[in-house]
Length: 436
Ligand code: MN
Ligand code: MN
Image (cartoon, rainbow, N blue to C red):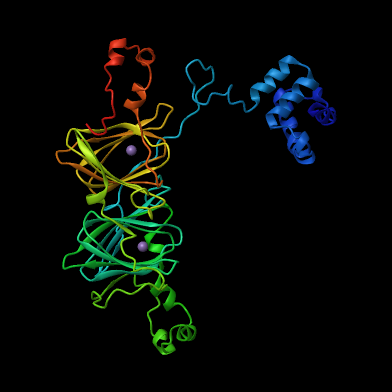
């Protein structure tokens, strides 16, 4: 069926006038693009350019030598091994180097600083490999607040490193919540929900923010002062009931972090009166209630959407690795991994196929990014506990361990991969070690 549609096209060409088979390929390619792919019904359309070219070369040229030369010029995955696998006769194609996957968020940029506090961020601008997650390290002085705002392109997650924080949030169903957070607690605010953060108590607070989009910038949020100060005072007077003269005097800029007093009024009721008073649906006590797994050389505490339902785009993990220990070789089939170092120092080593393994050191205040599916391990190279806050861009946690994999295959098969003796294959660590 297909061949009868190719023939008229092929017959337009005087194949013999081309001295080089490469020219034949180019002309066939041109005709494919011009006529066959565009002018035929789907039922006659060749499944691919390659099918078309193969059919054309075989049925019309009838010249084995030429067709094989043409064939070798086609984008044939099997023939053109890009990396020179063992046994391949094709020259290896140069591979992309690994991008840097460590960034010093605390010292990489000057960031924002005012009387009320500071903010430093790692977006794709500063840390290009981290396409799916952006981070901010923020400090607020007592009473200072990160003004009412929302984020149009990302949900916000946070971990309290020091001090206490109060948040307010409004959600589209008419729920308003005020929640207080302590060290080790996390929050999650869905994309677009309006919120505010304020330092509680008499000590400064420090928290780590994570956003489920690497292109998100903390310095491009939708802030209430930015909107109101740039909107017509007359419209605002009609919208709020305050005189237009009040709005006309506002400084035309975003407040971002303000300085104020803690509110003493009772917490506002829900806007929708039929909803029960809501609190804590955005808060989870991660250090206290995270799913704990203890290992010989450390522990992990996991909070996925199963434990914290609102956290619908991320999974969070706290991990401690004691000096001299490693987090075993593993990978995550469903998510990128983003880490922040709370304390200590170590190495991150990543395997990205094609013989690419890269190891980079990190320490307190730095972030790391491991792409989905890339093999990796962590090593505590210092003298103090390596404490990590980890985010995955999936609501469900998944991990595959190299040790589990080796041990789910027959020892003989494993032995044959590496030239081990069957005894060596049988003596491999035979259960998931996690951190050891
Ligand atoms: Mn925010
Ligand atoms: Mn991992």
